[in-house]
Structure formats: structure tokens, C-alpha cells
Amino acid sequence: MHRSDRQGREHARDRRLIARREALFVAAASVWIASCRRGRSRPITIAVSSSLGDFLRATLRSCGHPSLRDAAVIEGATATLVRQIAAGAPYDAIVAADEAPLRAPIAANLFATEPVAFAAGAVALVFSPNYRGERTLAGLASAPRVRVAIANPETAPFGRAAREVIERAGLGTALARATIVAENVRAALALADRGEVDAAFTARSLVTSASRRGQWIAVERSYHRPVSHMVAVTRSAEGARRLGADALVRALARMSADALAQHGLDALERAR
Image: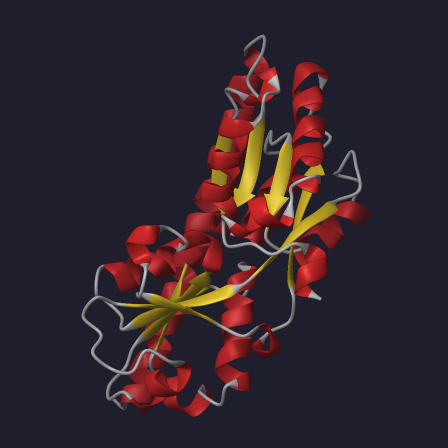
């Protein structure tokens, strides 16, 4: 069997596994709905794109609104979370990495409020601790037998952006047979951390800690379309949960450029 045929089959297998996991997530959400409805109350539940999980938890810790103190945070790929909302998952708000997957739910009347853009995301290229080549895009292309991980472009906006970076940077040929598709950006990052790939395209919001200094480079925004982060309240939010969801929207919309930068995010006006 030719290498390209074998890798094609491996990629097809990975896509089937991802689809199977997504189906399990939706089924679990349905069970959750039933259990929540049997109870008298539940804390606010926020769906968040994997690239923004760390940022959201830090924001909730600093937010003084009582309904947000015990918020449950559920991470996943943006499009997967949107499908779960459409299936009836009891999320009271969604913090999404990109606006594109939210367009269909808006038409389907699933949101109680118009989604609000609050920040812009950026792509980071993270290198494995075992990688010995030049830590640049060009160096990655020239390294022998290189393997690179990206998030699933069909469900994760940073996966889509990574694919655009690869093409616009002229790396398509070099990486065509060496790209591993992970479920989301956090999974892609984990592959690089474990040394299973040489590098991973992920979100800058996941790599801003001081412990990662020197392990990653920022990718120029000109290499990919803008990634606008959005927040919206769903129609599941009622009572105190609706108040908490509205407070979350206000808190994110009012964040300063400096506060966003601490988490690897840019203010919208700075990203233009």
C-alpha cells in the first residue's frame, strides 16, 4: 500500500472517530437535560470553545455576579457545541471561538440575544520539546519527516485557520502527508506536548503562560481570516441563570484590551 493511501485511510478513520465522539456528546447532553428537568434548580451552564476554556474560567473567578460563581463550564469544538444546543443541550450561554457556526442557530431562533463579539483570536504554532529544527514556519517546512497537528477544520475555527495558514504560507506540499487532525485545539496542543508530533497549530490563548516561553511563535494574522470570539445567551436560560448569562455578556463585552492581552486575545479594534 502506498504511503498516501495508508495516510488517507488513517485520516478517514480519525474523522469517523471524531464523528462518533460527537454523537456520544450529544447523547450525553440529552441525558443531562432529563436529569436537570427532574431537579428543582441547577447552576448556570456555559458552553465554551476549547480555545477559550482557560480564559473563561479566569474571567468567572474575577466576576462578582453571584449566578456565575458556581457556573458549570463545558468545553468542546465550536460547531459541536452548536449542534448540542440545537439538539436541546441545557446550556444557558455559549462563548464561541467564531461567529460562523452561530449563524444557523440564529436563524433557528435558538438564542435569546444577538451574539456579541468581544475579542479576536490568534493562531500560535507550538513546537514539541523534542523538535530540533528552526522554530519558524519556514523551518517547519524544511525539517525532515515533520508531523504537525491541527484541530478539525470542520468543527473548530482554529482548525480552519490552521489550514489557511498552511496554504498561504506555502506549506501545503510539505505538510500534505504529515498533518494529524485532532478533535480540537486543546487536543492538538496535547499531541505536541507529548512529542507525538513535531508541532501543532493551536490558539494563542492556550499558550500564554510563562512556563511555555520559547516553545511557540505567533502566526501573522495575514495568513488566515479573522477569528472573532462571540458570546450569546440561549433560550434555555431562565430566572437567575438568565441574569447570570446576561452578566457574562456584559463582563466580556467590557473587557479592556490589556485584560484580553493577558490571555492571548486581541481587542477587536486592534485586530482590524
